[in-house]
Amino acid sequence: MITIDALRYRQLAIDTLTIPPGITSVIGPNGSGKSTFLKLCAGIAEPESGKVLVDGASPRQTGIGYVNEFPDRNILFSTVKDELASPLRFRFTPCKETDRAVRACAETLGVGHLLGRQMQDLSGGEKVLVAFAAAIIGRPRVLVLDECDSHLDAGRCEWLEEALRASGAVYVIRCTQQMETAATSDQLLYLEKGRVLHAGTPAEVFSTLSDTSFYPLSWRWPA
Amino acid sequence: MEVAGLRLVLDHIAASRPSWSLAADGVFAPGIHLVSGDVGSGKSTLALMMAGLHTPGSGTVIREEIRSAMLSFQFPEFHVTGLSVAEECASWGLEPAIAIREAGIDVLPEAPALSLSRGELKRLHLACVFSREYDLLLLDEPFSSLDCPGKEQVSRQISGRSHGIIVIFTHEQSIFPAIDHIWEIAGGSLVDCGGMPEALVRWQYAPPLVRWLVAAGRIPESITPEGLREAACRIRG
Image (spheres, rainbow over the protein chains, first blue to last red):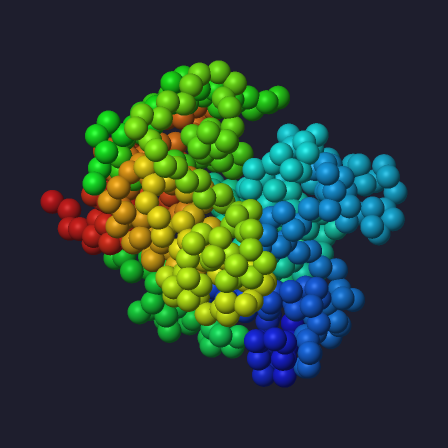
């Protein structure tokens, strides 16, 4: 379990929250603290007070894969190949093993044709796909995705769902503004003004949002 | 008031790089156009060529009677020129309080512009863009990072613009303005799906909700949330 206890960080205030394994989507208005929450879960930021623990350990002591909401802020290297290899190189994986893993990951995730490209020449969606590949190449225990789907077409979004399930990550925590996507998650958190107002299954959380535009459009339709 | 003869003509334009190419031929008349396409299909490159910021490898982009144009990049951070929210608004000639209110965000004018969340920055940027009138308005992924109320607000603002040619390049799945004409990039070419609602049956990679409606024979008159809901609730026969 990911447990959050008496958390205070900037605008965020969460007294107690438990996130079970599976895919957890975080939804809410712009500026509600979703990205800040994700950074705390990823260990990129540390609480001013309180705790975030992943199976009892700090996020910084846990294998984490993270994709920033600003696609360009994920980029460390100039080429796609180096970007994808970087998580393995940072942990001193042997070169041959890294090369094999990069090619296998790129082919599996459908970005093999991008390996020879410069990062700056990629489209927004391609940058996100490479960032996603770099986030999972090290097989992290926790995968944190900040609006990974905002630059992807419908087909790629469906593909991303399958890739998430196949990633091996025990916990996937992601922000999304696509409510149809959020509806397929195992858990849902609704944030507003730095507080978790609703947590539960998609059915439970969306039932509290039925008079808002967050309610999935297809759920309003007759079967 | 609409300018007579306002048109953007893509006269057999083409762009290419190793293992990728895009060809486009078509006429964009006043109204709201939607361009969809797969990741990396060339939507942003097409937007740059339409804006005159990228020269096609061949062919010509002809702007008939277009005297003002704006391209809103998909990344709002690319537009930021002011250090603070107030400076950013001022760079557009806007009073910060007015722009912040129009954006519907709760931020201080003295806050660093790049400290805003991406959704807040996108809303502020679009409020600045929408403060002016253009003969040609190109919006690259205007809905990315916006929350659902934000998408609905932006859709209403786009639908409410009465002047010029508006072209939206987007991956959005469910919340759209009142689109008049649909195009899509498929197989390296820009395909003219046509005007609404006939375009929906020719829209190969339509969002799942639209595909479901079309397959069920409930073709919506419009792909606004209201239009989709009306079609979904329509009693057949």
